[in-house]
Length: 134
Ligand code: SF4
Ligand code: SF4
Image 1 (cartoon, helix red, strand yellow):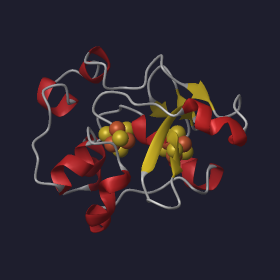
Image 2 (tube, helix red, strand yellow; image 1 turned 180 degrees about the vertical axis):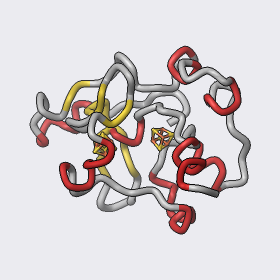
Image 3 (cartoon, helix red, strand yellow; image 1 turned 135 degrees about the vertical axis):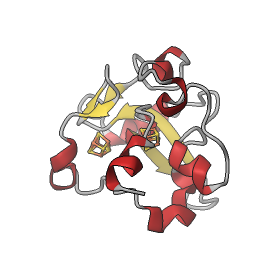
Image 4 (cartoon, protein in one colour; image 1 turned 90 degrees about the vertical axis):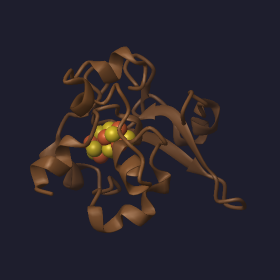
């Protein structure tokens, strides 16, 4: 798979760019509706994608070599689905042919987030979400 093909697998949902909390006892991961400061909340894309690793050092680079460790990604994520041998959903732009289908299907975070610049870390627990398919 070429780098361009790899990148095209991203459906543009923006879910992986939400802050997460991990239960230290159970190891369970909880997503919040608090978005990384670089997330463009309308387009659900990184506003500085080429420079993201310098601007947000804890941003994670997804690589096919790490596919066995994609469990932290949302269940809807194409990278996680393919790693688990699952097919892409109808709303994935590569299936629908429409980049807006991920928003129309309610999979993306559009209109449902607040920026991390507005929420102190100690308040993250108040923002845990349980969206369908997470
Ligand atoms: S969760 Fe997966 S498909 Fe959605 S934006 Fe992140 S990498 Fe792309
Ligand atoms: S730096 Fe960009 S890609 Fe990384 S979490 Fe933030 S918005 Fe997402």
